[in-house]
Length: 102
Image 1 (cartoon, helix red, strand yellow):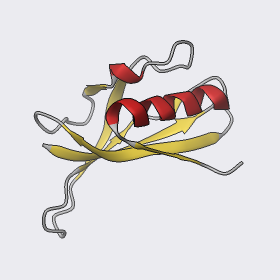
Image 2 (cartoon, one colour):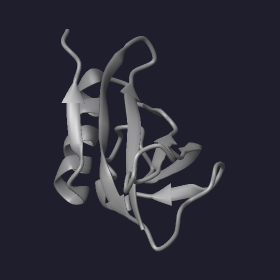
Image 3 (tube, rainbow, N blue to C red):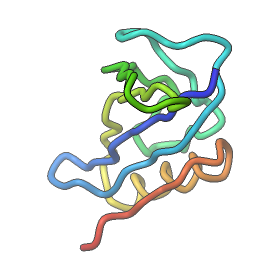
Image 4 (cartoon, rainbow, N blue to C red):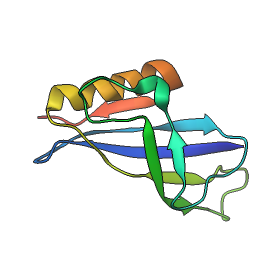
């Protein structure tokens, strides 16, 4: 099942960016379940590869539109660590990392 995902990348004090895009799942994950993105683990960056589904959003008004998963925020110790996670998610899962302007 094709699902659009959205993840915020943060440090303890600021928003660094967001990662989003479509992914294929065997079935639609439900709120509270964990999604494994273990290929994007970056040592010492604050991301274990497991991320919780916070919301499942269905949009019945748009024909053919995939559901959206709002995943838990990823909080990294530094902006560089957060950016490295965003880049890894792009590389391994084909998602789009949008860095916010400083």
